[in-house]
Length: 120
Image: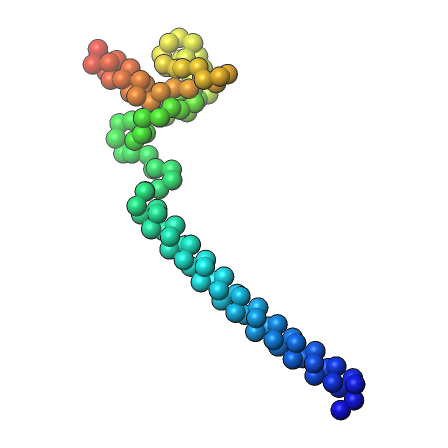
């Protein structure tokens, strides 16, 4: 066999070996990804969605966190962003100041709306 023919044979063998190793690595990565997907799916089933869907009740938020002023105005009162800030100024939306931000506690907003509804 000539040197060139030997070079081609060696190169082909090296490429086939590399292809086999890469195929094996690819299969291992696919198995790891499947395991991660299964873990994430089990975690989602256990913990629920990362961003809970809006409830079908009277008020849209199932949690008692805080909202931005425009979010609270839009979701509780159907106001635009500027209307929400005006309602905050009038005292229709309760808010707390956190740093330079105003946040609306959902529980206080619900309570305020319930009091107004009871007064009607």
